[in-house]
Image (cartoon, rainbow, N blue to C red; front, top):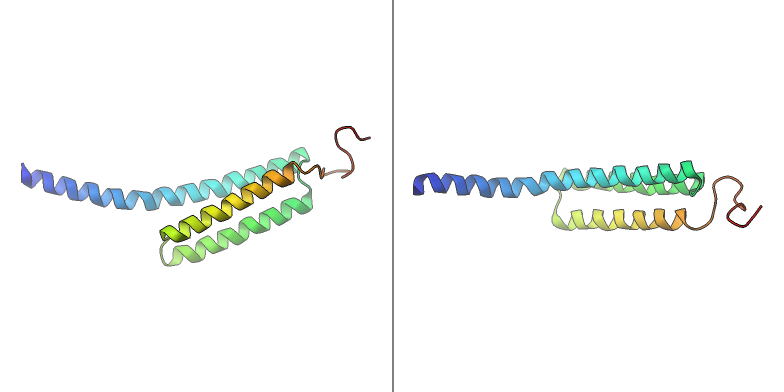
Length: 114
């Protein structure tokens, strides 16, 4: 019984250490995609101006370049947390810009204005 149990525990421990790295890579890519979709949606519905969208996309590209640099040596916990903070900041910027009443076409037009 011990002979069978030891390899099972070893394989389980190895899988537990390998899975978070794969899962974190997916969630980073998913977050980037989600933020890009939010920017696109803001441009389409007029809640983001083209200038705001370009700036937000630039921030997103800069974070993607940083992610590539981090991944060269393997993504550490600190680097993952740094990327998460940067994505949180971009998300907050998107939320702010979409609700700041700078409308995409005819910037002075908005609710209650002609």
